[in-house]
Structures are given as C-alpha cells and as structure tokens.
Amino acid sequence: MDTKNIPRDLKSKKNLSYIIKTELSRNWQLYILLIIPVAYVVIFSYIPMLGLQIAFKSFRISQSMWAAPINPRGPFYQFIRFVGDYKFWEIFQNTIILSFYQLAVSAVMPLFLALVINNLISKTFQKVVQFITYAPHFISMVVMVGILMQILSVRTGFVNNALYALGFERINFIAKPNLFRHLYVWSGVWQETGYSAIVYLAALSGIDPQLHEAATVDGAGRFKRIIHVDIPGIMPTFIILTILAVGRMLDLGFTKAFLFQNTLNISKSQIIDTYLYTMGLGGGVPGASSGTIPDYSYATAIGMTKSLISLVLIISVNKISAKVSDTSLW
Image (cartoon, rainbow, N blue to C red; front, side, top):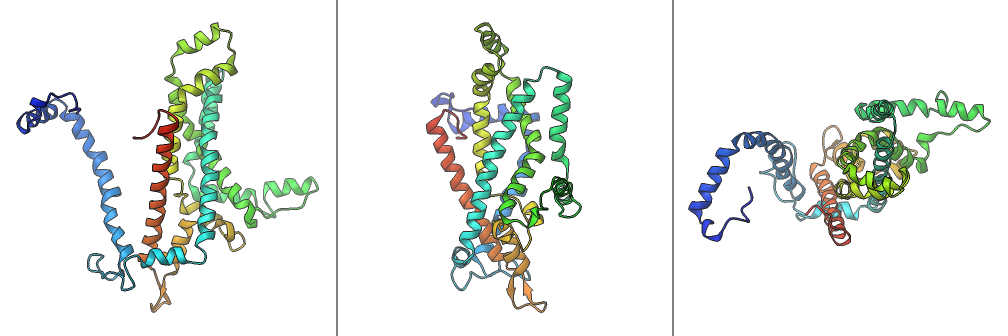
C-alpha cells in the first residue's frame, strides 16, 4: 500500500487506520497468500540469526546457547582467532579468486546462451536446445561430481583414454591444484547456465517487437539487432542479477568443493566453506573422550565473517551501479 500520495490531513492515526482496514478488506486474498512466503523467510532466514550469539560465547552442545557464558578470552576472540590463523590469507585468497572467476563466467554465459536461443530460427530446435541446456540443473551435485570423476579418471576416463590414443600422457586432473578452479567453475557452467538463461529469455520476450521492426527497416541485420536492441533491453536484468550474485559470491557452496578436494589439490581447493567444516565442525577442540569435539563457536564466527564480507561487497557494488547506471537494488 502506497501512503506517499495521501494528503497530510488524512495521515492522522484514525484516518490511516481506516485506510489500512479498507486496504485489507479489499485485498485480503493477496495478503493471505503473502503469509506463506513471509513465514518462510522469517523461520528460515531471521530466526536462525539468533544463533549468531554463539560466536561471542563459549558454547557447548550440552548447554543452551542462551545459558552459555561469554567467551572468557573476550567476545571477539573467535574472530581474532580466525583472522590470525596462519592459513587465513591462503584460504581467503582461494575463496576470492574462485568467487570472482565463477562470477565472471556465470554472469556472462547465461546471457550469451539466451541471446543464441532467442535468435534461433526454428522454434522446435529452440525448445530442444533450451531443454538440453537446462536439464543438467536437476542433476544432484554428488551425481554430477561422480560423473566428472568417471570421465576424468586416469585409467578408465574417456578424456584420458582419448589423450592416450592421440599419443599424449595421461593427466590426473583431480590431483592438479591449478586445475581445481577450472573444474569447479566450468562444471558449474555446464550444470547451471541453461537454467539461469531462463530469466534472460523472459526479459528478451518482453522487448517491444516494434524496436526490431524499426531496426530492420533501417537496414540492421540480425547481429546488429542483438547489439543495439536485445542487449540494451536486458541490461537492467543483467545488472540486477549481477548485484545479487555479488551478494552470494563468497557462498561458493560446501558440497562440490569438498567432493573435489583431496590432499594433493588442497592448496587451491581449501575455501572458507570447507575450512569452516574442517576446523569448526569436523575437527573441533581437544577434550572429548573420542579425541575431539566440534567447536561451534569458531564455526559460527567463520560463517559470520563470510556474511559480513558479502554484505560489504553487495553494498559497494550496488552503490557503484547506482552511480554508473540508473539500475540498482535500492
């Protein structure tokens, strides 16, 4: 409900209450539908934020997070511990490089694919290409990594067998640290590009056909119409999606990185998400009868640090976008 155009004399508590009641009575069905998504966001996004207090406390799983005492070494001890870790800069560098690499590729490839599909002459072939490209999105991450492991296997993999048949040496792709980032990013391109292109295809369908007709009358060919009509038409969508992607840039995901990770490529594959699991949940601190117990406070501090960095990034990119262009989130 927009209250900006309401006259000042009507903005009293009594009149505003009447306007709100009128709005609710007219559109109550829409507000009922709104309850489910709002409840989902509150339950799964806002309520879990209460657990962030664990980062500042000396928490153990046997006690309530409300009853846990403040860390005796200081409330910010776990943050200082993470930043002061000798592996911090290596892990941070791995995460940043992989994040920017993935962002650059994953932002451009769906746009390119959408332009290609949109300009295919045959509608039947267009639908076939679209189905083939977005189908990998529905493959489980574990299954996808398993498929790649089989394809790239040193002894039985198709790629190495082809290299050997051509007279080249076999390559252990999974064990090469310098190949980890390429495997991570381009496997994501194969799995997600087609699905991500759906948004751009929807934006392309909303471009006024008269713009294409006018460009054709002026003598513009297919390529020039893509450059001067299609790309400017979907650029606001591209900017918004890129800004949102920057906010999720450090959220590379634990599953694929962990499945690709091994002792030979760990110098490049150890990112914040895998380090959080290894040190905060998988390793823990000495003291339990089994040898170690998970350090939930340390894991929470690592996750909170990553979220704060992501917040700074999305605010910065949004401000830059607002200055450079007329498109921004707020």
